[in-house]
Image 1 (cartoon, rainbow, N blue to C red):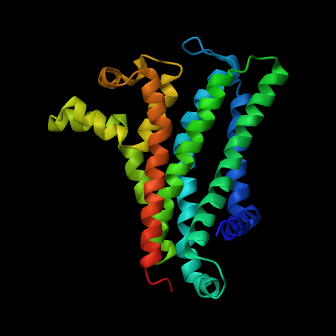
Image 2: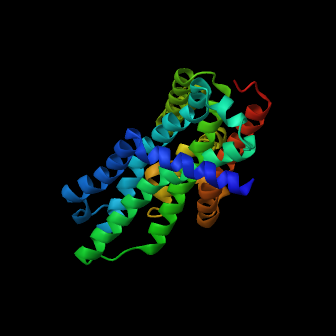
Length: 276
C-alpha cells in the first residue's frame, strides 16, 4: 500500500506541476513577496517592527485570504474531476487500493500547494540576508508551521467536499461558499452579532476560535503583539483562557486536526460510495 501511495502522490505532483493553475499559483505568492519588497515595506516601522518581521506579518495577512481559496478550488476537482473523467473505472482495473489512491492524492496535493508558499518564505529570507537584515528565525519557523497547518486544514476540507460532490462544478461552488462563510465570520461580523443579538462574549470567542481563518489570524498577530491589542476587548477572553504558548500551540494543532478529520470523513464516504 505504501508503494502505491507514493506512486499516486508522485503522479498527482507531476500532473499538478504541468498544470496552468500551478504556474499562476506560484506567481501569485512569489509576486506578493516581490511587491512587498518593491514598495519598501521592509523599511517601514509598525509597533517597533521593521525589516523581515514587518514583511512576514503583512505576507501572512495576505496569504490568509488567498491560500485557502486556492487550495479549496484546486483540490475539490481532485476526486470530483476524476469521477467525471472516468478515471475511477481505469483505476479499479489496476492493483491500487482506494485508500492508497485517496491518501496519495492528499499528500501529493499538500506538497504541491505548500511548495510555492515555502518558496516565497525562502525568497524573503534570501533578500533579507542580502540586505544585511537580521532574520528572526523563531518567527520564520513558526509562520512556516502556521502556513503548513492552514494548507493542511483546507486541503482536508477540499477532499471532503470533493468526495461528496458529484460534479466538479458543484464541488467548486460549495468550496467557494465554504471559504466565503469562514471569511465573513471574522472579528467584524462576530462583533455585529454580539451587539445585535446580545451574544455572550465567551460564546462569540468560542465561535471565532472554531474558525481556522480566525485562529490563523490571531496567532499571526500574537507573535508580535502578545497582548493582542489590535484584537480589541475580545483579547481579554482569549488571554484569560490561554497562555501565549498554549494559544500558539492550539493555532498549529487545531487546523491540522480539523483538516485530518475532514479528510478522513471524506475517505470514509468515498470508500462506501458508488464511485462511477
